[in-house]
Amino acid sequence: MRIFRWLSRWWDRNGPKRKLILVDGDSPPEIIRSRNLYLAKDDGEDWSVAMRCPCGCGDRLELMLATEARPRWSVRSKPNAPPTLQPSVWRKAGCKSHFWVRDGRIVWC
Image (cartoon, rainbow, N blue to C red):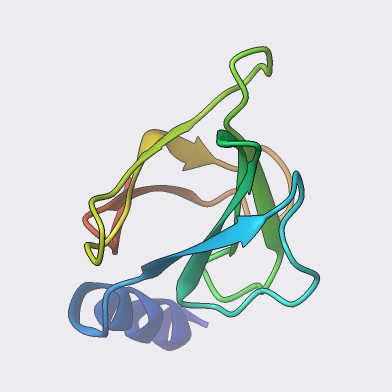
């Protein structure tokens, strides 16, 4: 298990950067690929970002971006540039991963 975690973290640092894919509507698609972040946008407003947990457990994470939501995240990305997600993602259940998405890379806490 330690080797898998080490390989996963090595791949996060050295593999291809994550891409931000825009989705029309207020919810992300059913199929989430592991190295992509999906930004659900409806009427010009950002609703949520979906991604697979980078630890390797494969859980689907959906993070709310709406100003009314608590907790709430924000995503920054220029066209054709890798995304940055703030604040960190800290899972309280399941694998309990804690990480940042910075410039398309996972930075583990």
